[in-house]
Structures are given as C-alpha cells and as structure tokens.
Length: 130
Image (tube, rainbow, N blue to C red; front, side, top):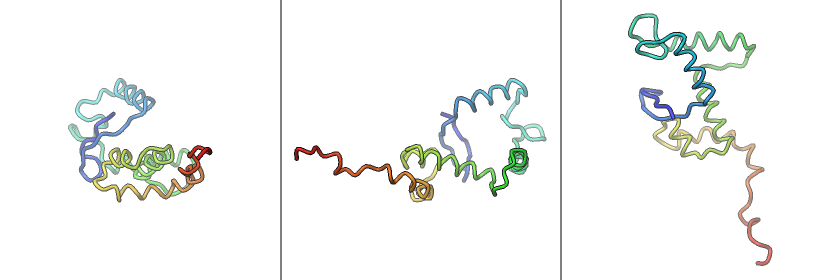
C-alpha cells in the first residue's frame, strides 16, 4: 500500500503499488536522492508541476508510437478499468481511486460487459437431484 496525499480532488487515500514500480522508484531515489519531494520541481522545495508531468507523458507516448488520444489522467482510468476487468469489487476500486460515492466509480463498469458471458447463473449451481 502507498498513501496518496492530496491526490485528485485534494483527497488523501491509500492505493496499491506494484513491486515493479516500487523497484523502479527505489532505483530512481538512489540515483537522484531527492530531498523533500520524490519528484522535485525546478525550484528548491517544490514538487514537479502538472505541466512537467504532461510533457513527460506526451514525450513517452510519442516515443512509444502511440497516436490514440490520451493524457496522464487516462492512466487513472486505465488502472480502474483493469481492476474491474480483473474482478476487483466496485467498492475496492472506489477506495483505491478515492471516490466518495460509488456512483462515480460505476463509470468504469462499461468495460465489464465483456465479462458478462462468464457470469454463472445461480440456478446452474443447484444440484440436479432437486
């Protein structure tokens, strides 16, 4: 778990961090030894601004040959979509994204339609003897 402080909407929450991402962040920290912020801004004592993050994102997208429209916020949507496709409960996705209302999280349910064919009818689990 990782604590997200003052994330989207100025909300604090806990989220998950992959082992791969953790190892990359540790390598980054060992190389750059940031003092106050993990991703420091150009001025001392400040964090990286959203414009810098957008520029880095668009450059990476360009280098990867991705032409589909996307922004850093698309990563948040992709994260939620993949969680739901993997079977994570809507409540857990809500907590990880920091949504106050489950209604906000339901926008990600549109992708789960492809999993509908895998849903078993409860009647099919009744023993044949009945």
